[in-house]
Every structure is written in structure tokens, then in C-alpha cells.
Length: 284
Figure (tube, rainbow, N blue to C red):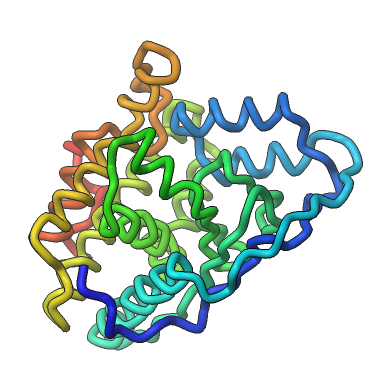
């Protein structure tokens, strides 16, 4: 990726090193953290896990952490990638006669308050529609490289672009409609809807990569392959096989490795938001 000379977004809130308590004034114990980790590996919806965690436990003490640099290379990279998403989605929305509202990206360590409840590292990166913020503990980038075998800057950029894709869904009203239907659906059907939502966010990440590169070339050889490795590494089937030794398709909430790769590729090859309609197609 060629981002060295790119502008940096001002919409990054760095909470690394800040003291944190749960949004509900409750403590998350080690057992609950373990459950959250297993749930994430099984492909659970982060917002659901957050809500469960926020409503359990006992009164929480503050957790003090050593302050992290506010202008380190890791945060500068995040700000540049986020700026790339702002410029790209701003142009896409403008072309359709709409205005893009930029999300805030929150960097945190360990745990942080969100409008969706208590966010924790074990949940992985996530988007909270209630406050229109993306939450990322940069420790996930190390996990992505060492545990999931998907190293590289563009693999990290894909993760950010995917979460911003959820923000786009929120702005377009897609997320609210899906949540409304999920609330009335069976667990199996609700999971299936979550898969379609996640695959669309993957497709939107592909649209971003294609459009951003057309606006100003920034991709380098091997970048897209990094994104594809990351998409495959965090497919529900692979995560379930690694964590539980078996695959349960009805419990998928994010899609298989093959599906995630296919929909990112579709977004990248077409560069079209309309091509990312995962809700009317029968074959994912």
C-alpha cells in the first residue's frame, strides 16, 4: 500500500491507555471473557456478545493502563486508511446525490465503553450503529498475522474497510431493516440474515478498494491477496474448525471462508455498490 503521503483522518479517537469501566457499571470476569472469546471464534454477532457482557457480572473497578503514544506509526496508519474510506465513500455517496456521514474510529486497549455496551478485545473489531463508531484494539492486527496467518498492511486495511462497510449499511438503512427482521426470526434464520449482512460488508470493502485505487492509485502488488487471505482466515467454517474441531453451518453469522473471499472479490472486480446485494441472491 502506498499511503505515506496520504492525509490522516481527524475522526480517530485514541483511548489506548485510558482507564475504563463497563458502560453499565458492571465487571466482566475471566470466565465471561473466555465465553466471549469462544463466541467470537464461533462467529457470534459482536453486538449480541457486547449486550450480554454489559448485562452480566458485578460492580466494576477501574482498570488503569499505561498511556500509549498518541502519534505512533500504528495510529497514523489507521488514520490514513480511515481517510481513504472517507474520501472514497464520500465520492460514492455524492455521485448518487447523497451525503456521506463519516464514522469515528476508536482505538482502545482491553476494554472500552460503547453505546452498544462494553467492548472488549476478545470480541475483535466491531461497529456500533448506536454511536456510529468503529472499535478496534490494535492487538487484533498481531492476531491476524500470527494466529490467523494473514499478515500485511492491506489485510489490516481490509478489516477497517469491512467495519466501515457496516457503517455504510447503517447510513443506507440496511442494518436497521435487517435487525428488525432478525428480531422476529428463528435463531437459524437470524443467523442467515447476519451472514448476508456480513458478506455485504465484505463486498463493500472490495468496492472501496477498487474505487479508492481508481481515484488515486495506492494498491501495490500482493495487496489484494493479503485481503483475500484475511477474509478466508476469519470465515466461520475455519474459525469453528480451529476452535471446536467441527463446523456447524446453521450457526454461521459471518459466512464461510469461500463466501467471504467471493464477495470481497465481487466488490473489487465490479466497483459497484449495486453488485453487493446479498439479500436478493439465492446463492451466496
